Amino acid sequence: MPKNFQKSKESIKPFRLVKYFTFTSLVVIFVGTLVLALLNTHWARAVQLRKSEEYARLLIENLNHQVFLQFIIPVALKFGKIQLSDEKQFEYMDKVVRSTLYSFKVDMVNIYDMKNTISYSFDKTVVGKKDFGGKAYQDAVSGKSNSKLIQSGSWFEIFIGVPQNSKLITFAPLRAERPLSRISGPVLGVVEIVQDLSEDYKAIFDFQIRVIGTCTVVISLLCLALFFVVRRGERISERRALERLRLQEQLSRAQHLSSLGELVAGISHEIRNPLGIIKNSSELLEKKMAGFDPSNGIPSIITEEADRLNNIITDFLNFAKPGSPNLVACNIVNVLEKNIAFLSSQIKEEGYIIKKHFSNDIPEIAADSNMLYQAFLNIILNAMQAMPDGGNIFVEISSGADTVTINFEDEGQGIPEDLLDKIWDPFFTTKEKGTGLGLGIVKNIIESHGGKVHIVNRTDHGARVTVEIPAVQEV
Image (cartoon, rainbow, N blue to C red; front, side, top):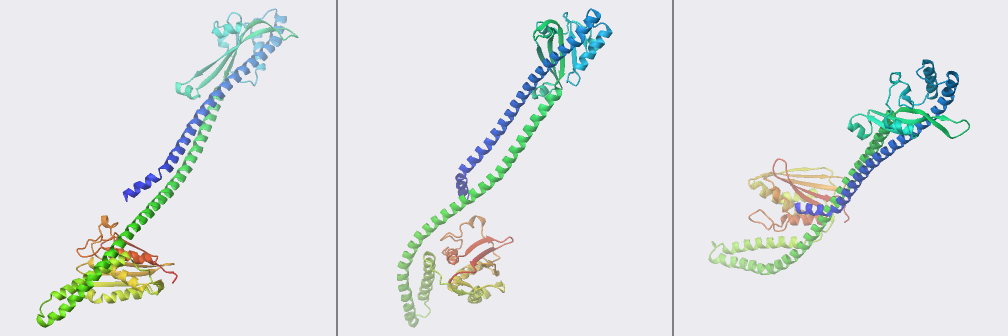
């Protein structure tokens, strides 16, 4: 059996190759999806950063326009010069800036003069501070707007794209405007705007998590469905492979038995003819010796051994060339009662007890009663031989919708597990005397009736032979 199982495993290797390829493909798709999600997230952050920079430049441009029109010109006309250290001018400037940036997402606004000194800020504590702008301030003074992203948090938070804080700082020149002209005037200072992008980055990260989570669930469901499909496919493939091997073994066994049967039949016929002559001669010799030496038993021994050899040859012929059953209406109970009646004297003398349990509704079947009689006789004799000191033999008959089942049980030692697969082989026997064809004849007879026979060991002790014969057959 292990050899057959190995063959079945070899036969389903192509299916398993498909399974491994499919699972590998799903893993590759999942990894590719994760990579694509990460790339899309990186792209989304880059787009968000670019849009925020453009947003900041638009805010500064609008702030530049409002400050020039609503603060610089009116204050210059009223006070003669711009001086934010004056509390009234500072408050007026603060009013213009805050009204301009009202409802916009701006955390901080700083306005530098041409000496890199903070002249105005949302945070009054930094007003008057010098040299806070750095290189970004210098670039803005030269007329170039620029931005930089500042993030804080652990390296892992920054790596996965969800830092604790993300701030975009944008520097742009504050210019004088020329009325009725699109040409900007000279640089008057520098505007610094700080935007908090933390919530935007967290939203992008949350979207990334949802995408990865959705992909994980979808791939997991696909893997689960594939697992069940593949598992079912493997079972079907294994069953088909084992069935194919079983059919191949049956075909090989049938061919082997056919060749063996022809050989046995030929030899048996050749032996039977001289054996008949030996038996007839011994019987004649026994009659002649009766008048000279009645105590001489040699002729009778020859006759008995000839009969025994004839029975063996009969077994050979029955196994080699079993006849086709003559199907007529048959009552299983009557056949078994006939078997028990035939063996009654031997059963009584050797201490056997037949315990019968026959159902009342056993239907008649189409069968050859003589062949079934021979099969049941062999089974009962085997049960008796399994208990040389006597014992109980249980015979039970039951019927189902389309099957009549006969169970024979003994209380012997049972059959060694390593021999269960060999008991149907021709000429295999564990008895000192026997041809090893008894069970083979039984199997041939039952299968010729379209039935099945199998043997198992009982849970306590002994063996059980189960015969199943179809209850409905065409006669």
